[in-house]
Structures are given as structure tokens and as C-alpha cells.
Image 1 (cartoon, rainbow, N blue to C red):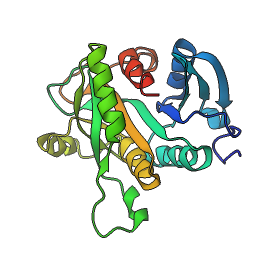
Image 2: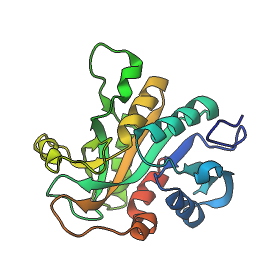
Image 3: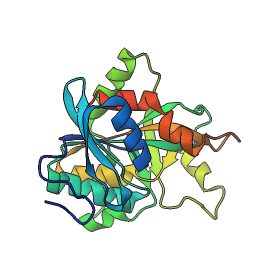
Length: 233
């Protein structure tokens, strides 16, 4: 049953999985929120865990950085392990001046400079959108928990260190809320397979602010985002 990137056996991964980019965030979430935790993956140190949250079986696994890495893990989880619901829980840089550090963004759609969609050989541009089932449930959960969220579109970039320092301004003008590097690949992979996908992000830095969160803060302190995602199992 093992794939080139996941060593789990059949049945070790739940139908709903949370996907932080950082495998250490996956470990933090598993051992702070789940009960009866078992580890199903350590290949490439991309830790994966399955446990129970409020009596529901759920898995958590890191994906690494970038659309290619997300595309690999999402594809194998869906096609080889039967995962139905894939929820990215990650960090993002704010394009919108209305967003501050630790604000939560739920990504309704994702634009990108990636050529990831070329594989589908479509005569046009495929919209990368979230599952309405997961999106609506996440918004309702946030309301019930009294956690403010902003719902809108994000940008999945292939470039972290952009030589064009002003490239982000055009996306801000188009109403794009924030930038990250994985949602486009997740949404299209899930859409092609008939699976559900959603991205929930915490703002870790901003193009309008000099302050930013540390690596440790991104690993352990984005708890409100985690609490929303865990209810989607």
C-alpha cells in the first residue's frame, strides 16, 4: 500500500485529513488535540498521524512547501488511501491592508502563477475553488466559536523571493486577500478527483507591516485556525 512518499498501510489514514505545510505543526496538532494518536508516516520526515477528535477519526499530515509538493501528497492521499476531505491549515502573507497578524482567512478560491493546470489539457482556465460543503461548515463553525474570519480569494505563488518587489500590488488591486504557496494545487487535485478541499490560513506577515511571526509561533500558536479545521471531520 505504501507510495513513494507515504509509508502508511491501508486503513491507517482517515477519510478527513488536515494538511499543514510544516510537519512539526502536524506533530503539535496531533499530540495537543487528538486522542489515541498513532503515527503513520515519517518518510522524508513528513510526519503523519491519525487519532480521534471528539470521537471522530481524523488524520493530520505535513505537505511541505509549494504546489508540486502539495500536488504529490494530495494525489496519493486521495487515490491511494481514499481520503475524501482535505483541509489545508497554513500561514499566509497579507496583501489586504485590512488583515493583521493572526487574522484567519478561509480561501474561497485560489489564483496562481503556476502552470499546474496544464496537465488537464483544458481549452481555457480552470477555476480553483474550495468545496462548498467544507467552506460553509467552516464558516458556521467559526461563528459558533466566535472566531472572526475573512472569506475570499488567495494567491498561490510559485515564487517566494520575487525579483519584482511590486508584483503583489496587482493582486491586491484585484481583491486578493493574501499569498501562500499550496492551495491552487490542492483545489485542482481534489476537483479532478471528486474530493473535497478547503484552505484555512492564519496571517503570519503582511506586505503592509514590518512585524511578522516567528517560525515557532507559526508552528504552535495558530490554534484558532486549528480548532475550526478539526471540527470539519
